[in-house]
Image (cartoon, rainbow, N blue to C red):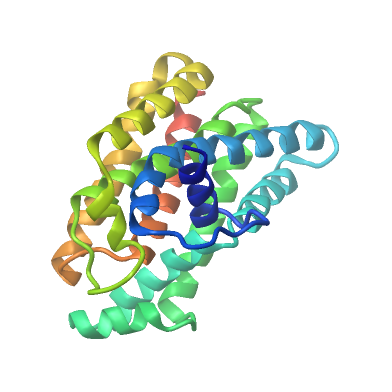
Length: 246
């Protein structure tokens, strides 16, 4: 259990440790701990929000929170979001070209534009919650983002012949998803009161919709798609939480 949690931390954050000899089974088991990693990130953000309250205006506080999350995760999921939009914009309908673009470390015009618009939307959503004093959804959104990607990793084929992401589908099991879902419901239910089902349904539908759409283009999913799904699920949760707090 401890090893699979450590693998999840290695995949999802820039935690200052590395494991030796990670095997495919470890990768599959780590899915169960994705929401736990999200909760750790969320509580760190909540602590930061409490420290910044009254010190910085809501806009700057929101920028600080979004930037801190990107720092803690190494910008991995944001990079995936940019790569997916670059592939969609420059792939010209060719599966091989889209996969090649996703492997390219450079960010193109489509990815840069999507990334900029996404970060603006995320900052505005966080700022709205900060202004309303609704700080507990700040704990929830990293949890939900990492939970909503688990069905994509388990249910959809991997688009490449090789890659660590392929092990999620091969070694992820239903009890991993059940455990992750129970953790997510517990955190969101405790922090968002009676809106938990609604706040979970929206991000999950967005994640599954993205997976279905990109499977048609790629014949499967990639690590970049997983990252994009996490980011878009987080934003969906933030926007929905903002509306429920009106």
